[in-house]
Image (cartoon, rainbow over all chains, first blue to last red; front, side, top):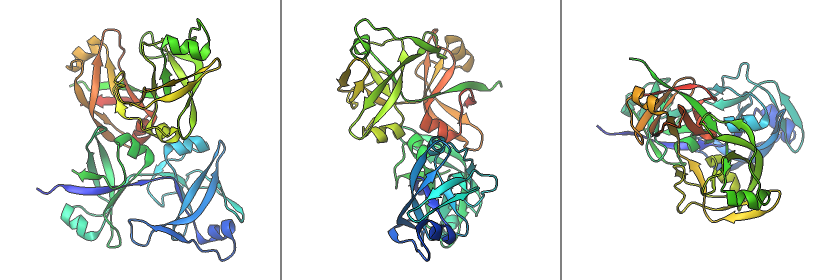
Length: 189
Length: 189
């Protein structure tokens, strides 16, 4: 049988911001500018960065666009320790009860009361990939990594949409632990 | 069948130093002092720390004692990036061709030409544990982690010795990626 291979995308810490927050941080009517398109269609790394300030430290993070309805800051556990926030592992958008942080931009700052998460690893699949792999939206799959830090990620969430491109998103802690670089191929079991 | 459970020990970045290097860094005749005993009999976290300086940055690391024949610096991939050294994943003592770094202490500094590694995850077992688990020294086993970042570490090296205590050593990248804290139990499959 054909192996079900998926390229890996490593997510460094980053911010998704609401348009309201973008304007507080960068000025009235400000719009994000595109530095680089990302693997998911329509998504981009912006030129703009902000500072996030926690009880124990601050870090500079890039903004990913476009603007979202709700601001969400994604960090690795390593970053969360440095900031001094207890960010839980959550799926994107599941922000209830997560810690807040202060966002600082060139034109102003805003304190968010929640929104800092460690993003749960997940696989984006186009509808055609999901058919080929025989999985459905919200399936949980095991994913095999080979190499010197070989491991199997258990219970990886699959998200299927006709606007998605095939890509497994993990954070830098996970990438380091598994010895993975951007574009490396992993296998859905 | 009884589950083969092993407690986890998370290794932060640290230095093992030769007595020669200890004396260069801390002064003639200097001996490390014990801050805390570690899980492996005879091993201890010292009160003494040093700075390690790479091409891109420097970090403060604790020394683990007692002195060894050869100095060895163990960092996570995250630390290696920050230092600017390409530290490979290696077993302890396998230092050939690994990068060097400058060690700085209160009494002096020394440049080592090799010795910086990302320690390969491994399990220490007392001889009696190995008998109970049905494994031998240098066996490679798979280790299951449960919880919100469940995964299976593949090909984990087992070291058996009557001077060892049962303990799985992983670094902070691996601990963060697997959602593990010190003392959490993992299962040898």
